[in-house]
Image (cartoon, rainbow, N blue to C red):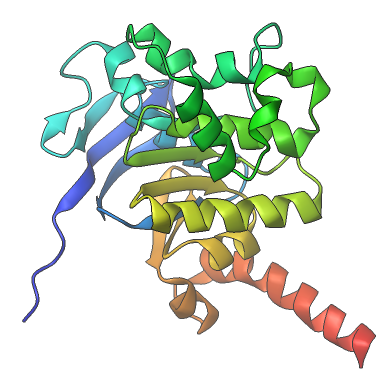
Length: 255
């Protein structure tokens, strides 16, 4: 019998409350090294709150998040965040900084100067011309800016990548291309990736494991194949029904 992969990331009865409302309720789960996990659910289901508890952009009310064997609350938040790659929903580049300065920001806060060759390498990883290093964010398209955001998240050589609705503001073609590139980077760099998305089709296409949230709890934990086979329960299947209906409509048009 093969042994289960050790937990790379663990949530232990994690709860986050705002006044009398539990945004996340007693979530316990483990994520193994190398998994690509999608957190899916309706708006307000708690998925972004759960993600942000990992890097302490949100402080949990009860329970623990363990990264390896270390409680993320054990030390200062800033060094923890610099160990974790994070791609913001709203891209989050500093408009007065060049592309190179944005990418190098995390290492610089650690007292490390990122060499020009490393910045060029990171830009190439996200399929951007290294000559863009001197440009300002306003000179880039939305897709290019988000690629810079991914490069910045990878600059600290972290093996944990968190993404909060990373492609939501992009047009469908750019969204698909960047999603495919991130999936390849996940494999090439040996990352463990946790992505929040409201788009079940995106989760099914990119993730190796899909967690469905509803009212602050994990209500389904399945592979994409299992979800497409009808597993996961009512809430999960309601989300799967959307891309299914779209596929049928497209098939009807082409018939």
